Length: 204
Image (spheres, rainbow, N blue to C red):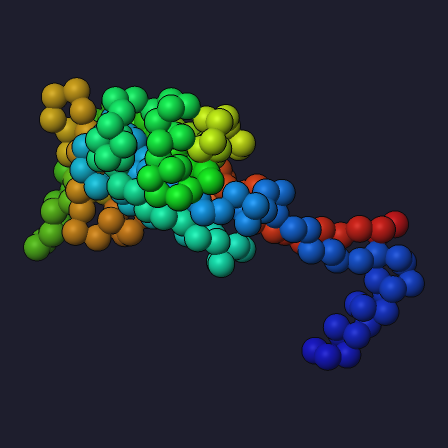
């Protein structure tokens, strides 16, 4: 194995080919301290909170020392600063109250779906095929200006879903197993600017 690796290294040297690590497109250190408001969603249940946690994990995967303050849901944050909607004045007040330079906000839209019940001996599960769109942005508290924004879509069958009227409710004993793949896929797609990657350069 060592000889094979050496042979590859020699070949790369003579061809002028190198594998180079590219730093994340967005370095969050100049934007600290960073706050995050729990992502809004039109679905009921724990999905918004769950996706927010996955988003934090994705953002800090290659920037582990970044300080992120979890502020709670939008309603709670706005009440804390005496505002009724997120706008430049609200972001400025949030920044001053919590000593933040920037704040992440996001929205998770989930399409209507018809859940189906799966019954097996000793087990029952409610699944549904859903189409979800995650949008997020990073806002500067001093100006209310957007520094970064991105969105991603995913469609898949997830468990732990119930339908009441015109809305969906996401509840599961094990959220990671029920809809973890969807949340993780959306968050990884949307946060690629905050992660580094390897590139081959100078290859002929």
